[in-house]
Image (tube, rainbow, N blue to C red; front, side, top):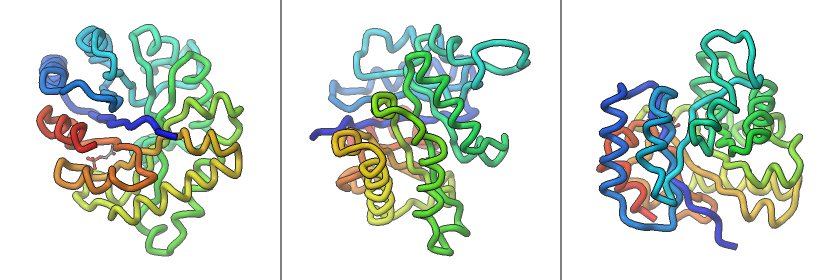
Length: 251
Ligand code: 13P
């Protein structure tokens, strides 16, 4: 079964309005037609405009980087799933390690956000991954299994089939230190095995699992050539059109 290959950019808290427009146009202009699904994960202020710029390009989609678990209400400063949907958002990055570390999100909360995103017809990009001390203890498989089970395994098979998982070891994010292709492959195979045990072969074989953490044009090809690595979630290198498109072209 051929899985969907995906390259998703996570701009994090970068780019003002004009810079975001220029980056999007730069990416769109440099892209060659391909079967790879390209997702731009922008701050909220860019969503409407990026959605307009990419609307005629069938393989380019829009992601938000978070959303609130409730549909509406007195939650000053928050943005809900129905609001994102109304801006043309197709994907929502959830459970990023920066949100876990700085905004105290845990997998019980992330599970609620997953439900909100699915209930509104969008697809979660669920991030998991271990901090350095857990890797040094050799406990990364247990931790990631716990994350995935708590946040996702309450879902029906039908809902689970809409999930994209991103494995992002915390020690590789923004550090220039990439997981080796073997380390990425080992964890991706582990995640796919968990999904196979919980659901079935078709669900496990259809799941796109992205690697994130210091992916660059120079290392993307080798990472993406691993059997269970179906693409990448790109931070720093998604902020330059040339680098991001070079990563898209690594497949
Ligand atoms: P970097 O590519 O900058 O390491 O960031 C990875 C990431 O956190 C993507 O979500």
